[in-house]
Length: 385
Image 1 (cartoon, rainbow, N blue to C red):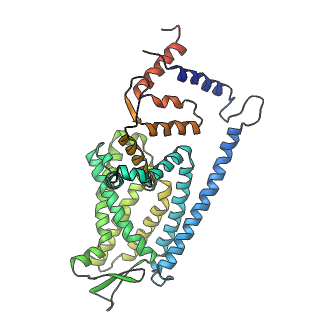
Image 2 (cartoon, one colour):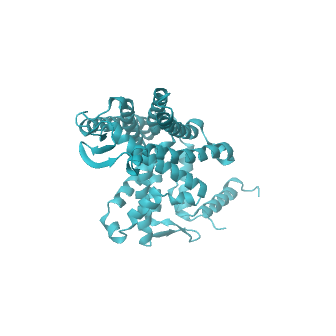
Image 3 (cartoon, rainbow, N blue to C red):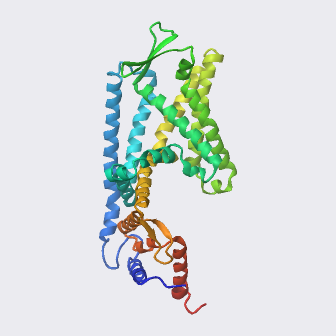
């Protein structure tokens, strides 16, 4: 096996010296006060939290204004849906807060900037005009990357994804008073769907279109229940899933989806077959479960729904690099690692984090293992072969 190239070998003792003289995990040097890096690390969370809170407050205020003006100064706002609307305001604050904190990290910030730069690049559009819609459809919509892991997991994820999308498209505008369904006679069967007070569709509640209009949330629930049920069953049976799962992070979101879906279906069952029996209790139970889930989204596993669109830009960033044949080869064996811009982006992120070994990003995983083993034999186990 060959030794690491000279530049990399020279970098490692430098990293070791920094570690040895740090005097502790807080970045203090012997006989000195806190280092500049340590002081900056302690001050960073406070400034980031302030910016995130301000951004969350601004977005929440904008949503409140959108609700007021979108419902024509609350003329179309249903007061019975007030708890749902309040929960969406808290959701807007929480999502914006956590998203701002996430983007403030050096690695996420660099990926975020490069991703959006790729999305709005005229040069990328000229080179690959169909790349963006294709990635939105395959990566964001149908999530083909999940199919490579398991077809069952992909199918379950699709059921949850499209069920939640359908429910959000119906629930949020209705909650905010943007959509209204009105009837001239008060009891139908003719209804009009209005958006911001403007008529967009007239339909008969007794035909198929009317049935779909009034049972859209039931369809969403039927999609979500088997998908969430599969993942819940997997997390109770699969050893790999059981090992790393956390109840609040992994199990609670699935249970919340199932409770929302089941209570929603029970509301329909009560109104059709029980003549409204138990409807008030089910409505309160359904409302509590929905409000809890909306407030929980920014702090649990569902937050990846908000993060996922940002990954599309990063995929486009890598795709355009491959189109230009900017593939970076391993410095030791010559095997392709990734695109040149992506490797340089990784090295720059590691330099931002002051990791001190960013040159190792230029080696493939196998060569890094070989070089680490070689260094261990020659430096640590020297004389004990």
